[in-house]
Length: 151
Image 1: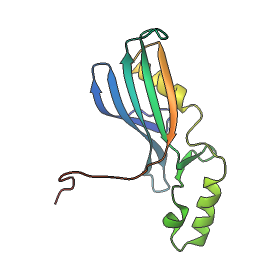
Image 2: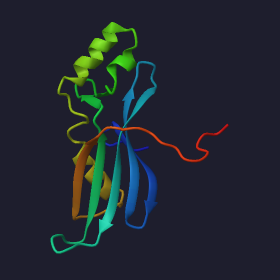
Image 3: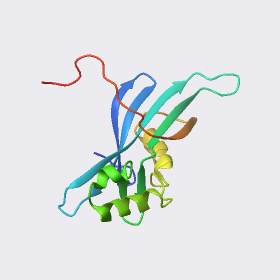
Image 4: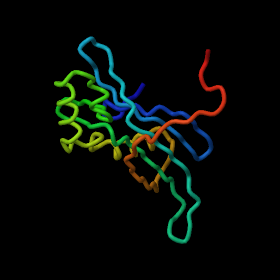
């Protein structure tokens, strides 16, 4: 597996003519010589035919979770979606998660979008010209229809 910036994995979920759907994960080696993997976003890439305003091009929509923070000093992604629920009765952890959430740390490594663009070209998923929109999102809920879970 090739990592972007030696930290991020782009896992292709679907690939069709002129279209890619992928998940983005942050990898951090832990003290046990294993890897902590944190889902941080999604990517959609499509080939656009052009219009009155735009030439034919590839359009990339990069969706990054708004409930994660990236600590560049430790090359670590920290989930801060619900400090109360995450920490439980651990007041020290609650204080830490709350401080990280309010710290102003970014959601991802600052080079990630540009490195994704380079990676997409290197892997022949797309070619110039390319336009990329970057969105920060939060999960608003979950619904299921039909038999989703295995017995």
